[in-house]
Amino acid sequence: VVFERIIYLPKNKILFGILNDISNDELKKEQIVNFKMNTLETADKVIEKQMRVAQEIAGLLGETTAETKAALLKLKKVVFEENE
Image: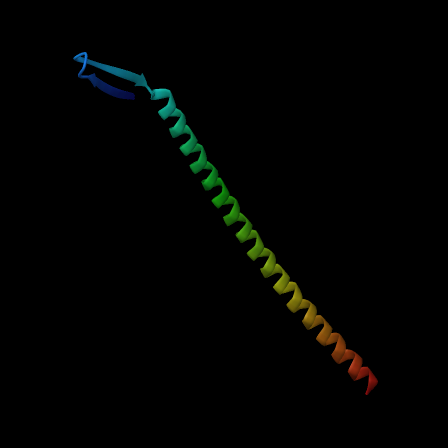
């Protein structure tokens, strides 16, 4: 990739150009963009995994809470039946 600038000096009737090879700069920009995109993809994957784990934990907590409630209700029933 080349950046070019052409200048005309009418007083001296001279036309000259300056060419700069900006290939390395463009390559670095592309590498930075790729790095950013990869970082965003990794962040998305981590967030998705955390959401999945959080849902699994919530499900397990719900199950154990229901089991605990059922056990306590049975215990409560036994205690009340003993007192009668």
